[in-house]
Length: 124
View (cartoon, helix red, strand yellow):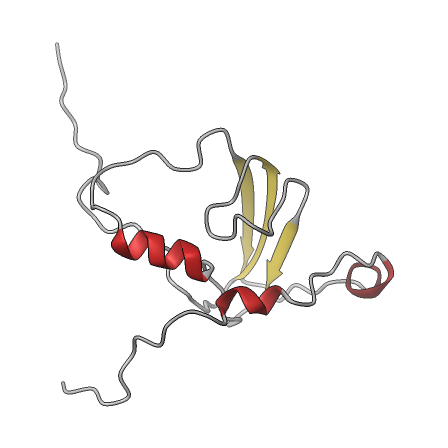
């Protein structure tokens, strides 16, 4: 018996948009490269986005996904990452924010070159 199945997302536009949701997200990278911020998110790194904090892919990832041909493709090959979400507000400790001296104070800069594609005048 043969089953030919089409993945649910096979003909859809795959792009993680810049977002700010009601969940706190803690993400870490164990192995490989993180497609949304390849230049600065290394194995052993982690990020914490608190509730309603804007976040998303860097400008290069956004541009590449916006121009990519809409065909199924493998992403995150040889990569292992994790993410925990919580409806609770999570906070970083003083050690994590200051003492360890590993905080990326320029993290926000990866979004500075994103084009402004939204119109202030919406006709509904």
